[in-house]
Structure formats: structure tokens, C-alpha cells
Length: 550
Image (cartoon, rainbow, N blue to C red; front, side, top):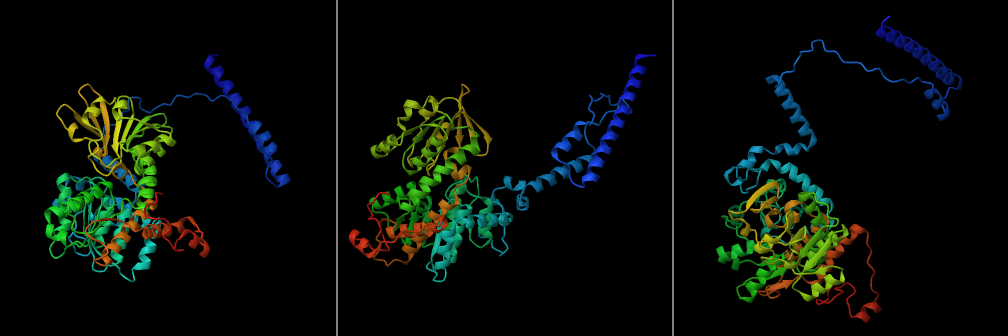
């Protein structure tokens, strides 16, 4: 008898034995359940399972009917169509249905070359794709949920229409949060035309949603420099409409109107500016005696400085860095240039992740604050060769120069958290000897002749709004401040504000803060008459003098 025959008989005998044992186990389990009419205990279940025979599986070779059978290298036309359809369907299922409004061909055509019409029949706008309006409306509805204070202001004042007759031209970041502000201004009686202050921060779907609702918006993500100024001009230079109020972020809109349309500028009733760069430009105009309208410096209001600049940047700096670089920051050496409120927020966030943080400063008071907070104050030139990340947030120009870029180590990340794109000398890197390589959206490798790479984010523009998003609640505080500043300037008697730059009245700052306390279920303590008299205060505020430093 051959060995294969013996093995076959042994396997058959073992299989017969296993069947009998399995039948015995089944009978045992059946008897238990019938007699007790209940579920097995863990012990009984364990004993039953342990009785099940186990043995090594017999390896079997799979036999094909035809050993030489081959699969075709490419699918047939029908197969390709089916595959394409299945991939397309799965991609659509993975995203919001509104995302299907995006047409890949739109990316190849400049919005300036497209003729678009909204549902009202208007063509007075220029956005990436008006078909994205529904998607943008959902984004705005989400933002509304965390901007209760601004919505509260809208509900309280919309009956009075304090901005009736106001024609506001705005140049800010166009995001879902800004859209809530714009629609609030419209609810309060204003007519608005809007453009973007940053070529990378525009949410295209939000711009479409605003345009669909009748607000002329001229902005899209990824504008060229020429597009940027063209969009500003389209907002200002339009037949039958002349602005009488300006809401600016960075001063570009104010500068354009001042230079190109001086007659329009003279008739402006007020300017509201929210950035360091824009405020600096206003003070320059005022000092030169060229500011012929009153302006409100929102950037230095307490509610902007202490909340938007500090707390917003403390959270959004990490969001922007993580989304673009995927870098782990524990142990990384980071330089933060500037220790104002933005710099303080950035340093606090990076320190919490375990980064070794250095700061650079020109102001001895801010430098001393940095020292007391546990940071080393250095000159950038002292550490530029070995640090991993450099972040600018000064509002100045040429904070990081070409010489310093040349000395950075391979793989150093360079980005900007200040408003202006002049802090990093990006223009000096656009030379023939350096190669630019786009590795992902808003991330460029700038390659030196020796192979060294510097990772530049957002081409030196504002990191958090160009590469990520910012907390909605904080933007609610800033937006409410801007709305109140516009209302104040538009309704104030001519004698109240002269042709100069003013800070937001302290009472308004406190009012903005009080509107947001309800979100936290916070309850303020009230002064008694005796206490108010002792401190020399009105029981309803303001509670601090203008010179008080929070």
C-alpha cells in the first residue's frame, strides 16, 4: 500500500471521529438549554467550547481549470466605464453634495473672464463659482451658531436701522464669519460692496453665497496681484454708487481710494481699520495732515487686542502649521519675531507643545515680558543657523532678510502671522539661482544651489487665514466691535470726531465683552451705591480709565 493511500485513510478516520465528537457536543448543548430553558452560564459555555475538537488545518492547493489562463492587462471599454462610474460615485458619497458644484474646468479660467449670473439676474459680482452658493450658505449657518453676540446686536438694532443710508465698501478676509458681519450690516440698513484683503484667505463658496444674496463681492482664493487691485477698484468705481464708509483690514482699500479717487475719499464719513499695518498707515496720513476723514482704530481696542490677537492666534497658529507641514513640534527650536499680543499667543501655544521658543523684540517692555514668561530674547542672527521654525508677527518689513534666509539650515520652516506680506523678504528669493517647488497648497520648497530647502508657507502671507481657519467665537468679538465702530462713526454729530484717528470708546469695548459673557453663563457682580461712590465710578461703567492696561 502506498504512503499516499495510508495518509488518505488516516485523514478519513480522523474526520469521522471529529463528526461524532461534534454530534456529542451538540447533544450536550441541546440538553442544557432544554432542561434549564435559559442561557448558559460562562462556565457552562466554556466547557462546551473546550469540547470542540481542534486540529491543524490541512493545506490544500487551489487548482485552476486552465493553468495558462491570463487576465487581460487593460479593462474593456465597458469595464473602464464601470470602474470610472464606481470611483466617481464613491468620491461623491464622501463629500457634501454641494461640493459637486465645483467644476474642475473653473480652476483653469479666471473669474474675470467668466460671465456669471445669480438667481436675481445680477452680474454685479466676480467670484470663483456662483454655483457654490448653497455650500457657502451652510458654512455661514455654522458660523452663526458661535456668533450669538453679533446676532444679538443684529436683533436689537435692526428695527432702528442705525446704518440706513450707509454705503459701506469693505476690504477684509472673506470667510463665513465675515459673511455674518456683512449680513448684519445689511440688516441694520447698510448697502455693502466687498473685496478681499488677502489673496489666499477667501472662502470661494462663502463669496458665492454673499453674491447670491445680493451683496456684490469681488474676490476669490488665489488672486494675482493684478486681480487684487482690480477687485478693489470694482468695489469703489461703479456707476450710480459711491461709498460713504470704509471698513478696512490692512489699509489697501483706504490707500487705493485716497490715491485714485480723492474726491470720493473726501466725502467718506468714517474709516474703521482693524490691523496694525492699516492703523500705521492712518497715523502716517494724520501726521502728514492728509487724513481728511475721522478714522476708528479698532486694532488697539481692548476687545481686539486681548481676544482676537492673543487668544485667536494662540489656537490658529498650530492649526496652520499642522495642516501645512505635518511636523511634530515637541523639542523643535522656534523663533517668534515680535512679542506683542500675536507673538504672545504663538509662543504660549508652541511652548505648550514642548517647543524650545526664542523671541526677538525691539521694545524693552515686551522683551522683559518675554523674559518673565520664560523665553530667551535673542537676535535672529544669533540663532538663525540652527532653529527649525521662524514665525514673524511684527507688522514691520524685512524682518527676515535674504542674508538670514541664506544662513538657515535645510528644512527650516518660515511663515508669517502678521498682516502684511512684507515681513519676510520673499521678493529676494525670486531669483534665477533659486528653484521654487510647490509641494502642496500654500507650501513651497525654495531650493538653493547646494540642495538646501527652506519651507515657505503661504508665500509669506498671513498663515492662519491662508492655510487654515480661525475660531469663530473670537471673530464674533472683533466683528461686533467693527459693527459698533461703524454705527458710532456714521451716526455721530460732525463735531464729535475731527479728521484724526480715534480709539473705540471704552464703554463700547465693555458692551462688546458683556454681549459675549452669556455664552459662558457668566454673571457679573454689581457695585453697590456705596462702592461706586468710593471708586468714583458709574455703576453701569465704564469701569476702567482709558489709560488702563489690561
